[in-house]
Image 1 (cartoon, helix red, strand yellow):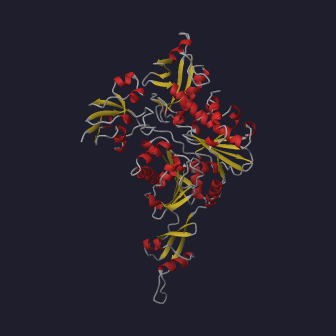
Image 2 (cartoon, one colour):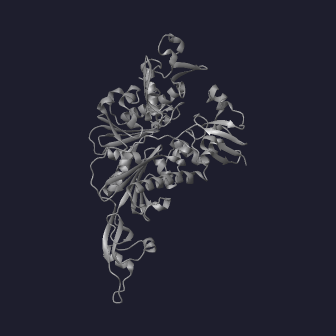
Length: 596
C-alpha cells in the first residue's frame, strides 16, 4: 500500500487509495481544519505537497487557491484523492484557545440528589438468620434493593456507607466514607467543552478543565456533523460518541489528579449541551435534527449510569442530562434561561446565546417564546478566508487609522488569522472608514485617489475586491465573500430578534433587558453588536453579559434536586417558533441584511 509522510509531524501513514486525503488524515488523528466537513466549499483544509504527485487540480479546487499558493504546491485535502507515495505538510495548527469557563449564578439552596448515609450493619447469628438485603433495608429504612446492586455487593458488616440517588440506594461502601462525595458539571458545546469538579458536600468548585470539542474533525457545526453521521451511518455514530466520552474521561482524570482524589469518588455527572451534542453523547441517532421537519429523538432529561456510555468514574455513578425544548433549543439554552430566571421576571427580557446558532428566548408577561437562527460559523471565525478560532495568533480587534492598522492579537503573537470578534471589528471599521457600503459591497478602488490612505488597503483578485489586513508573516484578507458571511449572520440574528418581538406583540422600546450568554457572546463588545446592526441601536444600554450559563446550569442541577425539577418544568413551558414558517420572514431577513 502507498504511504503518506507528514514532514512537519514526522508521521507516516499507510493508506488504501480511493479515499480523499482529508479523510485519511482525520482517521489517523491528524488535525485538518474542515468547517464544511469535506464538502469542498470552505477552502480551509490546505496541505502542501513536498514530494510525489497528486491528481490534477479540479476547477472547484482552483477557485479556493491563489496563484502563488498553487505555485507553492498548496492543495485542498478534501478534493484530492491520492494513489501514490507522497510527502506533505499540514498547514493548520492547534494553538491554545480561549474558552469561557465562568458565568453568572443566582442564589439557590443546596439540595443534592446524590447523598451518603452512614449506618451500622449487624452480623446475622444462628438465632437471627437475616438475609444481607434485609439487614441493609432495615438499617437504611428502605423496602427493597435493586437486584443489580445485590449482584455487585461485597458483603460487609459494621459501619457501612450507603450512597443514595434521590431515595434509591445505588451503592454500598465499607466503613465511613461520608467525607468523600464529588461530582462533575459539564457544558458540551459544538465548539468547546467545559467541566468543573465539585465537592458536593460543600458545593465548592475544586478544579476546572476545558477543551475544544474533538468532534471538530468531522465538521465545525452541528449540521456538518449530522451530515457526516448520515454519510457514514455504520461508523459515524460510534466515532462521534467516542470522541466526546474520551475527552470527558481525559478532563475528569486531569481534574482528579489536580485535586488529588480518586475518580472512584465521583458519584454523579450533570451535563448541559445543545440537543445534537446530547444525542451524540448518548449514542442516539441525530439525523432527524438535520432535515425537515427537524425533530429530535428525545428532549426530556435523561438519567442513566455513567459507565453505560464508557465514562470512567465510580461504578453505578449517575449521569444526568438536562432537558431540551426542541431540535435547536437545547439543554444549554434551558440552563441559561433558568440561570437568568426568565420564568420569574416581570420585565420584558430577551436571552440570547450567540454562536454558530443564535438561540433566543423572550420573556414577556409570563410567556416564554424561543427561536433559533442559523447564524453560521462566520461569527466564530469559520467560513472566513483568513478565519480561525479564538486561539493564540488570532486577531481579535482591529482599528483602521490614517497611519495604518492597530491590531490586537491573542497571546501577543504574530497574526496568523482572524477570529470572530476580529472579523466583526474589521467589518465595523471598513464601514466606518467608507471602504464598505451599507449593502455589504466594497467600494471600487478606482474611485479612491491614489493619495488616499485607504487606497493601498484594497486589492483586486481578478475582478474581486479584497481588503489587505496584513502582509507579513501571513497575508490576511477580508474578501467580499467574508463580508457576505458576516451579513448572513447579522441578518439571521437581527431577523430572529424582530420576529420574536413581533410574535409577542412587543415594541423595541418596551424591551427592558437583553442578557447575552455563550462562548462567543462574551467576547462581543456592544460596539460590535450595535455598530454592525447585529442588534438594533435602541438596546445599546440594555445589554447584560452572563457568561457560560450552560455550565452554571449544569452545576446547579448537580447541586439541587429542586433546580432539576424546576428546569424540567421550565423546558416544558418554553414555546418554540420556527422562523422560516413565520409570516413575512423572508422579507424581514432581506431587510436585516443591510448594515446600518
